[in-house]
Amino acid sequence: MKLCMFSPKGKKLQRGWPGRIEADRVIQLAAQTLQSFFTGGGTAREHAEFGLDEVDLRPPVLHPPSVRDFYAFEQHVKTARAYRGLEVPPEWYEVPVFYFSNPAAIYGPEDGVPYPEGTEELDYELEVAAIIGADGRIGGFTVLNDWSARDLQRLEMKVGLGPAKGKDFATSLGPIVVTPDEFDGSEAQMVARVNGEERSRGDLRDLQWPWERLLEQAARNTRLCPGDVIGSGTVGTGCILELGDGRWLQRGDVVELEVEGIGVLRNTVA
Image 1: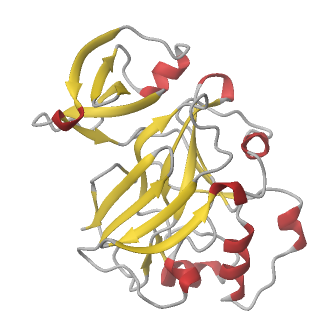
Image 2: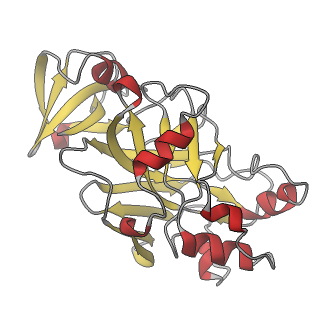
Image 3: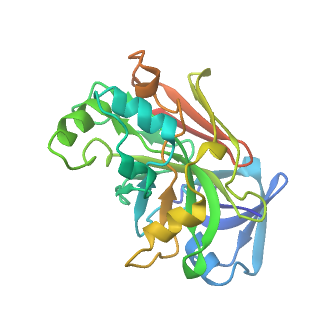
């Protein structure tokens, strides 16, 4: 099943309404959010129908309880650490690690993402995210862009904490959520384009751990809530930092992250 949050064109609803996508139609669901839809067992009465061309898609989760982003692709870890003169620590192979990002800075498909103050090295990051549904299980998968200010990140991580200000200005999610019966998160081609030019390509099958292991670690000594976002981390070659060409994002650039089976998450650097 393909799910979304949507706003009929012209209404400009910030959160939007939950919907089920069927071909070129969106059927409104009788729930406040996708979180409540999942909590209610993944069923709801259906209301009005709209054409896909009659709606604007909103972030699948506008105010997630938490955003955890893992560091789970070996190629990305090796390349990113090599730029800092570091090896991959053996502990990386023992346990999946993540950082918490900012649930108050979520952007959806087609949203303008403000260029963050104080950086000259703005980067995209090509990822898949699991959205938690009922009982701590995966409700569905979507595309995630973990925007990064590399110069800010580099500075703060020298202290041994973070990333923080290098990350918390924006996370993009969308365009839709695909439930595990249609997309199990085991493999998918992943592509990033900037202004129509392909910059990155990888495959979800290179994830170091299965999603079940990521969720087990995320839930350790706590609990996962409906709407929690669990990021995969950046696929190999999935950011400008790894490419090493210094072609950082500029104001006005259009960034498209495409994941086979989910769709294209498109944002403009505002």
